[in-house]
Structures are given as structure tokens and as C-alpha cells.
Image 1 (cartoon, rainbow over the protein chains, first blue to last red):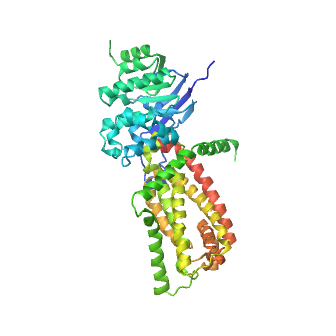
Image 2: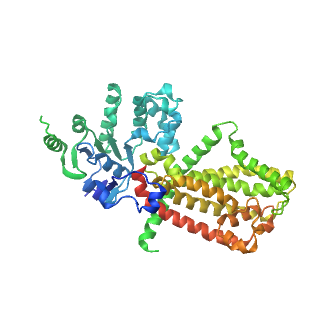
Image 3: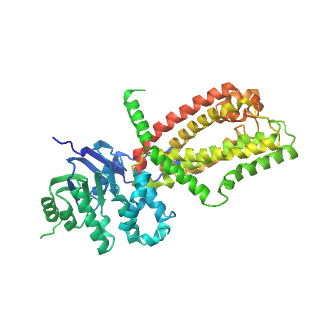
Length: 247
Length: 267
């Protein structure tokens, strides 16, 4: 039997609902040392599933039910408070994608920096640079500081870089909501190509049509728990029934 | 230490080793920002210690009668001020490393220690690049170079270890307790005066020696100075510096590993 590329076993992560930052005084004198049982909630809890290489999984659920947090855990940018998470392969995370870009650096520098931070070698970056630029359709703005780009352009650059990482696992969180029709079409094509070439995908989207289009399997999350794990159509049906949407 | 502690420690170290390419990328970016930002980039990085050296030199040779340090005093000063500038800059920057780069930290799974350690390295390289200034002054003021210059690499290693430890200790704490940043600034200012920079380790009165020796910089700076002033080295200070530095690194790394999970939720 094949080994799963992602194994999630009893994973949970807890956030504090209290104030985000404490001053030194609170820290020293009020014994207020962060997450305590009574003032915290579990954003994700007791979630377990295995994903095989090449599967594409859609995460379904209303806002604030833990979908994005779960993706962040898989991306390794957050660490679970309980349970274990085995991710056997590199991850190309299209999550908060414009976040990693440095506003003051130019588009060119940013592309190199972000590609490098995700582990791409310098020679590979050199080789793929023209492709990335062409895909983002950003040629005229290469030496413009990133902060001067429009929000649509920012997403285009970010998507182009991250989708070129050639990692076996790709995470997509609502990135396709931005961008014009033409770019969206290009993205769809890219995602389809990556799927055919065997990339494992996790997709968060409120666009149910997108989920149907890209995914074969669905995970239905509610209040941080995994309610249902099955074929994407069934998962979407259940979700629609729960929120009172009918076909 | 139990196996449960040791295993994560080795896996962290090996993960860090795998991140070396990203580490280099960030160090290069730091230096580029520093030196390419302005044509005077290099000058800016040496101007601070240079001006301070001139000020102290003036104060202690013209206004006060100097009873500490050695001749030529300006070289003596610079040999302490240049590493101090590294220390000061690295502690200030590493302490806020996770906060300043929070967006990058949040969006990539790069081994988190890298964000801190890369600043120790880039500041260290800046220090090495500032050494020609010391050489120029040594030649100009006729300070003799002694064979004890071979101690310098040891000093470099000890200071790197100490800075890595302090950075790993402070950077997660400052995310969780914001105003700690001010405390760090004040402590650094005081630390300057309890460190043999404007005076030498051998000038410390006998009854205070033991206390001053606990400051790892006492031993470390005397090793740098040994290149021109070999009488400054007190080996018991160096031994203490080594023990304290390694201890700080171990504690710092443990704190970092412990708080990493919480920090990632807070940034």
C-alpha cells in the first residue's frame, strides 16, 4: 500500500481569546502567562485524516471553522498543540501569499527572495525567472517597488512564484478570489496542469463551483472538528443543507 | 538531559543545517540592504564606533587624566568599540528579529532560528569588514601587532555563541512581552559601562574582578585586544566567558524551542 503524503492524527491547536500582547507588568505581576484553559478556544481539534499522493482535497465550512488554520498547520507555519502531523514532501503554500513579500524591495528582488525562502536554488530561480514574469504579466513593473503594485498585480506575482515551486503538495487558500477573469483562467489552467502531473492539493474556497472543479475529496469542518470526510459532491451537499442552501 | 530533550535538539540542529541556503540568502540580503542602500554604506557602519572612539579619546586624554587602558589609547578604544558595536547591533536587531520580519516568518516554514541567527552573522560580517579601520589606526599610531592576534578567532567564536544565545532567548520573549524591547535598550546601555571598553579588564579593582568576570564580554574583549595589548588577557575571564556563553546558548535555544508555538500564534 502507498504511504500517505500527509497524515494528520488527532491534531488540535488552541488560541487565546484574551488580549494579544501583554506588557512586562502583566507578565511579572499578574501571573498572566498566555493561553489558559478558561480563556482559550480550540480552532482545530481532534482532526485526523490521511491524504494520498495526487489527491486533491477541498476544505468546506463556514468562516472561522478552522479551514485556514488547518492549512497553516499543514504548511508548517503553525505548530499543533496536540496530535501529530506528518507532511512527507515540500509544500507550496498559496496562503496569505502576498504577506511574505517585502513592500520596499522591487518586484524582481521579491521574486528572488520568496522563491529562495521556499527553498528554490539560485540556478533554478534564474532558469524559471522569465516564466514567472511572463505568467504574472508584470514585465513593465519588474523594477518597481512591490508596494506600488495594485492588489491584483500583487496576487498575480505571488501566485506565479509559489505555483512554480514544483513541490509535491500545494495549498490554495482563497487566492483565486482576486485577479481579473483572464488571470483566473490562467490560474485554473495552471492548477489543472499541476493536478495532472500528480501534485497533491488542498483547497479552501467559498466558491463551491471551484471546489467541485478542482477536488475529488472534501473535508467538512465545523467548530474546528472534522464532521465529514468523503467525496467532494457529498461534502458540499451536506454543507449546503446545513447552512440552509438548497440546490 | 533526557533523551526526550536531546532528540528535538538534534533534529532542530539538523533542520537548521538544511536551511543553510536560505540562511545565506538572508545574510546576503541584509548586507545588500546595508551596503547598497547608500554609497556611504560601509562608512555608516564604521562611523558610529569611530566617532565614539574619538569622543572617548578626547575626554580621557584631554579633559581627564587617563589612568586606565594602554597607549596608544585610540587603538585600545577601537579594539573594544568595534566588537561592542557588533554586540550592541546584534542584540538590538536579533531581539526584534521575529517581530520585524513577522510577515515572512508567518508565511514560510523556514526553520525559525534562521531569522535570528542570520542577523548575528550579517552583523558579524559587518564587524569583520570594519577591522581595516582598526588596522589603519594601529599603523598610524604605531601600535605593535603581537602574535596573540591568533586569539581573535576564539573571541569571534565566543561572541557568536553568546549573541546566538541572547538572540534566541530574547526574540520570542519580545513578541510576547512587547515593552521588553525598551528594557533591552536600557540594559545594553548599562552593559557598555560594565564591559571593559573604555578601560581594560586589568584596570578593574581586585574586589570587583569576580563580578565583572561574569560578564562574558570581559573575557572576549580582552582576547581581541591581545593582538596589540597582550597583557590584557586574564585566562580565568576567558574560561568564564566560554562557560557563560555556552550556557546562554543552551538556555536561549531551549526558551526559543519552548515558545516557538506560542509565538507563531501571536505574530
